[in-house]
Amino acid sequence: MDLLLVKYLSTQTKVAIVRTPFDSFRSLWASASMVTNINREPCAIRVLHVGGTLRSCQKFLVDYNQKLLIRWQAQLRDLSAGASPHPPCSSLRSPLGFSLFPDVEPKQIKDLEQAMAKDKDQLMALS
Image (cartoon, rainbow, N blue to C red; front, top):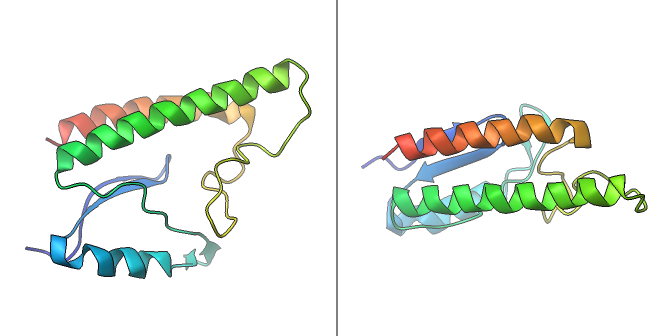
């Protein structure tokens, strides 16, 4: 079996599903946590879920995307209701402080919604 196999990658939503043997997932997790830039762009890799099957990872990612959209829609409602502005998606920061979706403005949320819907279709097709 390959040590590392990228089963799914979305450049729009910045999410990947990576497959590795069970006995090496901790090493991969530790290594990924040490990455601070990709192509000279600051980044932080966060492990959102560890699953035993591709299906469990697919289900988690679809649920995660839905929760993310609900959070963004609530932020948009707050902004349109006149709540004090805060940095866009400020709750979506990595432990190192990098935004998981840099420069996401309210007007871009619709595009990300469409990308996440496309992700859902592609994820379900992986099975």
